[in-house]
Length: 312
Image (cartoon, rainbow, N blue to C red; front, side, top):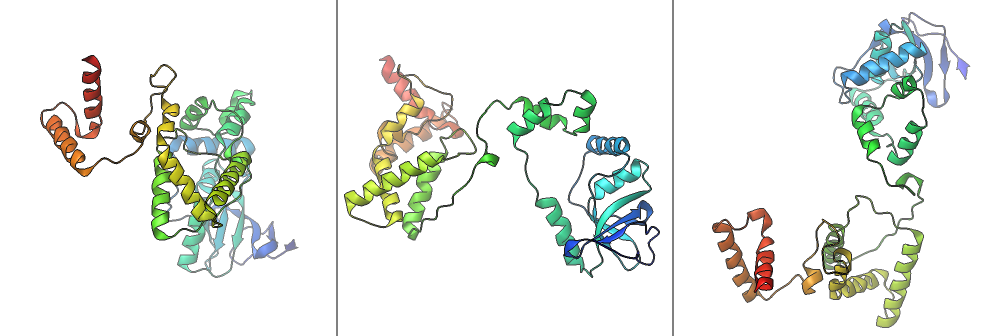
């Protein structure tokens, strides 16, 4: 680091050091800070008060705001507005900041502001719960700054094992013709609708199974294109949709869960002859008009007919 003289107009020159990358570190008086007129990042009052209390406890800032040194000698806080205001509220007269004195247009200042707010990591809920539970002191739990909403989410964390943040990823790219891509998207969406978890982690064993299945299809059909073999795998899936019953039907013929089930797992297809569909459509509309079923639950038409048939 290279020590520099403080810029003219600054009221404090105790620390003013050049950092790698051209940024600079300085201790400035809070009265020399200027805050953003518009700030998309907000902080609830209880969170802000928690931050103020933490700064009072520490007696200083442990995270530095990022500022733009303007021609008037004021430091415009581009990132860390709440932290800086909390420091003032905590009674601090000076705080350390990282700043740049490189000329910045208004657009450049806004882009820095938004990027510092938007580009940030996410907490792994499983690890977060473990870390929080390791804190025994109630005052330190409060210091951690987790709000009621986050604590409620931690109470609901029950899944253990590998989590997204701990996995290594391998990206695969397949090229499809437009009509093939459309069919692939439909198949993937159909499968996704019956998965309970928002995140599906595929282990290397499943990846190996996919490659093995592709190899078998390529051998059977004497093809060498990976995308084509994947399409053929999806075609085989479409022809065996009735096997999906194993996912929602137990050994006694009752529902195995309270979620949804694809009709194709019963009928083997989503399609019926157009003439038959016209008759079914008229029957469904009649049931809705008579108030027997609601528009959002048209599927009950099939349930009622099946129940009546089983009772005869």
